[in-house]
Image (cartoon, rainbow, N blue to C red; front, side, top):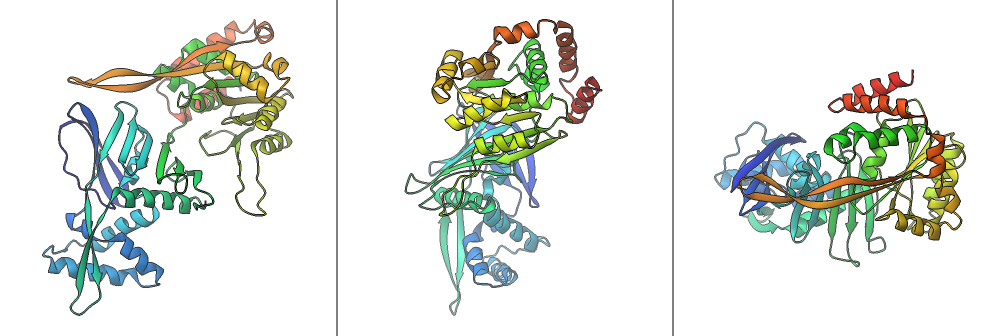
Length: 455
């Protein structure tokens, strides 16, 4: 499925145009039988669907000139009465092949749609989670390709590229682009492609049939004004978290999977003084602080003989040696990570991290199991509990979809922190007004405004 020319049906809800590698693709969201479907339509000649990208891959691996194969296909298309007279034929066919061999085939435009949060690719098809329409099924056209066999006279073999070919190609290309092996010895992979700003979680044989989950990371970093506008938290809550983080009070954000923990952590960090050094410790690249003095450190897992793993606790220790003002960890899971982060934030460094826990009691219980003796430390740590739920939302006519609502359930401020910052009401008022003024501002405006606060 290197090209999608599917014919749309149903009633259109919205559409957008994505251009990638010179290929213009229209993405339409349509109401079809009371569900939302996504139609991917590449704006290329229909005859390009018969080009076999796997044959090009074999041809290139043999060291042959791809231009020669393009000429062969031009001749085949002429014999099949397609008459490829387009002046851009060579560049179009190169772009289609490049997208299949080096990007992610026909679903590549989905990775560039800011309204999509997640993409699921497996042998059952392609589905996406959309910010407004919830879970949608993606319609892709079935592609029959032709492979020339060099006989006299030349014979043509027809075959079909299936969803299985697509999911395998996405998995292989994600591994290749991120220089991460995907083998029987390493069948579970979680990697980030920085060019498209997406995170892949891949599982393949012998663990399971190949399946790929793609988290589409926001092209613009989350900020507190944005989250307030979306209704995740109030202006008062945002101002309080901003002030406490600014004072280097550690913030631990708990919640279930997909509840917006990392987004909130990124949003709080974006509001801090830009010139303060923030070290981001992550297993995958999912936090972004443009305009800030920041350094990203990545965990490295070891699956090869003689390759030393680099763990988050080692990276946290390294961040302290770098003189970090804030140690921001995308998530702590293992005992060593919990201990290292708690140690960092009790030695004068500010810190933000996330942790899987549905409520405060569960958070304390799990943390004390992972890091015995941490009860005293938690008395100086702000705990934020976030939640999410699916709510029915009308998107036009009689069509209702389930949209995920994320919200801050509770902010627990320990008594000793509360006593220390009793006199911050005026400061909170100022921060509330700043957040209110930045609801629709650009990142440059936000950085300029918060920069003036510290000048």
